[in-house]
Length: 453
Image (cartoon, rainbow, N blue to C red):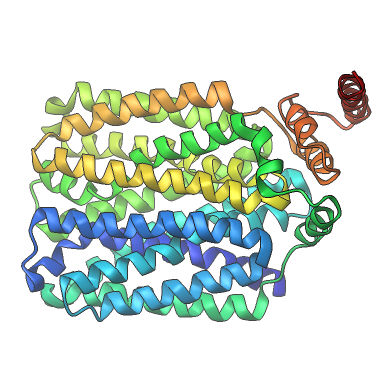
């Protein structure tokens, strides 16, 4: 029971994060009270992303020193404060400040929750699966929860001038629940404790350990940047996309958003099982390829599909379903391939680059939406997916649980360069683990010879 509550405590932070990000999709309601322009509404979105980037850069590395438990609790406190201030905001500037604070707490969730899930897995090979389950709970249900709450309030006749405050108020409840659960159940994993002992033994700095991983960091940070351009660029504007293509009221466009979130959940349920059969790299490649093809169809046949709203909706769901696969793997790979002693820092850098992409995507897609260039949005997603596919192929290692175990052991022994070579050596079977040791021994011998010269 404690294990279940601990997993729930880890996941509820990401659920709150996705809920609060989804709230931005309906942020135009605050404009009725503050008389904000389109540019000012876009700035409110950007303010939250700026906070997220700050939270990732600060909280990720900090958790490598203070521990995952304390880091997760601090994230919950900051998110709770930001959500409360958002609900009670008395001016546009106050709302912007509140969204920055909320973003700091939410930003820390990504590296901390994913790193903690990977480190808490009984077997290293289960790390990607557990992160996929975390993503299912947080991203799947969290993204569906916000349009559901909004739609219910629309049906209940809540005045639009107050609707946005109630939406943020639900975020306050979720944040408070997460804080209580984390305080009562979350503990640092044994793997993290062992990595801290190794760090004290070798006295290596974060940069010394992390610098040999430059190629891997280029892959995790770059792919997350490109993925978030797509994900947040679309999901921050899909209510407008549907209202542009569906002859219905605004409430019904919200219902379309809700259905789009719910219908993606089956692909997220499928992802944990899929990651036990196929490597994270191949799953990521498949996701970007499928997303690119679906958006190419939406771009090429946009005018024709507008005449058949159901068909348009189905293709939109198809691209979201493929999009969910790299949504899982960008988080999983960033949390798996780095040594525990710098995992928070590496995952934080990768996630921060993702939120930078979210900022770019949200602003750029909003500008396209304001210009009525919905087709241009789909062309941009196609091009971005193609670039992400290429970067994945060139920079992401192809590994399994044994590969990660061997690489992590080398890093704990103060040999990060050999750890990286092991990481890119490919999947290692149980029978081949002894060959992996011979490979490392040869590398160490070569390095010793070079130093003696």
